Amino acid sequence: MCGIVGYVGKKDCTRVLLDSLSKLEYRGYDSAGVAVFENDGIKISKTKGRLAALEQKLKREGWINGHCGIGHTRWATHGEPSDINSHPHTSARVSIVHNGIIENYQRLKGFLEKKGYEFESQTDTETVAKLLDFYFDGDPIGTIGKVISEIEGSYALGIMFSELPDTVYAVRKDSPLIVGIGEDEAFIASDVPAILKYTRNYYLLDHEEIVVLKDGKASVFDKHGIPIEKELHTADWDMEAAEKGGYAHFMLKEINEQPTAVKTTISPRITDGMPDLSECGMTTEKLAAYKNIFVVACGTAMHAGLVGKYVIEQLARVPVAVEVASEFRYRNPILSDGDLVIVVSQSGETADTLEALRMSKRLGADTLAIVNVKGSSIAREADMVLYTHAGPEISVASTKAYMVQIAVFYLVAFELAYAKQAISEEECRRLTAALAAVPELINVVLQQAEQCKYIASKLVNASNLLYIGRGLDYALSMEGSLKLKEISYIHSESYAAGELKHGTISLVTGSMPVIAVATQRELFDKTVSNVKEVKARGAKVIFVTHAYKTVESDVADFKIALPTTDDILMPIPAVVPLQLIAYYTSVLRGNDVDKPRNLAKSVTVE
Ligand code: AGP
Image (cartoon, rainbow, N blue to C red):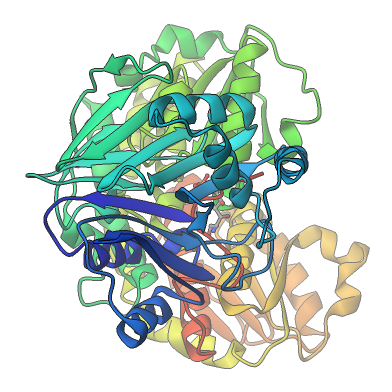
């Protein structure tokens, strides 16, 4: 939800801001803008549309030449995408960029209007620009301190005061912000990829800390102006990881990175053939003591939790409730000391998941985060963290993050099942070895990209689609359906195959293709019966199952043949064709695959 950047150094600031913003466009892309100190003050250029539109505008109307500035790429919350609502927002003496939501902006706006301030945009952000102006008394840190004690909500703010040239100030609460440290240059950014072209070193800014970028250096203070020493972090992936590397889209690259991502995530957590989660402080004894497990997440991460639920319950016989974070946090859930809450998040910044985590801690549960982004808010606030080592996921549609999230759930389930003595050591070793072998299976499925493209060509004109499955295959269907919806804009629903005839089958006609997933052998015949029912009503069926299973023509029009492993691990190979079908359908419809409409990668507002 919006990307912000800032730069102080010797380079062409406008160029640096545009380059850095291009790595944050996944966070929002309905408008963009920059503010740069030029000789005679702050100059601003902003426009509705993508970053490319801003660059064209700058070339057309005049490049802003300077060495210090801030920039923004927007995902609209307050006010439609328009030139006026684009950031930076200003007052007489202040220019700001903002990621987050100011919840009490209406009240503050009313107050400022009474003081004579006039507003031109519909945004919440403009209120902060005016409030900074109202309090500004020549002391920037004191002013920022006063303003953050009045605003409510979430924010990462990049700020410039026109009376304080060549200096950028920034502050955050509940929205991410890092401080890049280069040679004679310093940056602020919403995420690490924005700075990787220039440096891999960065500080993580904590809540309400204020950073000052000046003379190519960064200094951090608390809101009272007391200097703070920060630990320097080094990004463990480089520019290449954040580039497309020859692939047409980040999504395709990320789908293809899944074998490596799984390997990198699970290998360090297998010791002598057994799962080992001790790195995060999770001992076997501790695991064995949990009575209830809750998995709380949003979107694809929540779907990974559904796979986790099936696997944990099946193997360890511990009840697992999977909850959508935006519901969980407001429904006063019954949590207590002996419970474990697992929060799952690629970005580690999802507002609802973060708040659900905080609430769970308040209610006394132990919290474990499965997170991809190092140093993210969720990673920092959870009691225990298991990082998924997927590298940067840039495409808005999550693929490799889902894959590594489920890989971690398998490790948790195996260790828990063994800790509870629900499976023997021998069985635990067998399952762990099977998990370690799955990257090869993913590679086998990736070879079927052309077939998935062909199937996509048959779906491209559909208006509606159904995904069906039973058990783990139902959990997987939900993810397949979401993937298709978000990037192809074709409406689809996922259904428990056995539930269809309780209503939804009335929708099935020749123009409603059905993707049926049947990898669970115990349920295979049942699913086949359900598939025959939709086939009998004219649906074209794409049937995803084990390669060795014979599928008659009265069951399926197309078969996707999966390599076989233990049934419980089948979601790993089975999700790949669902991702590829969604990807190619989106490509064939001419959509912007990596930046689907109305979406953003990191949902830092509720
Ligand atoms: C995935 O394709 C989606 N874009 C979305 O559902 C995403 O998984 C969700 O917003 C959660 O994000 P997180 O993993 O960063 O918390």
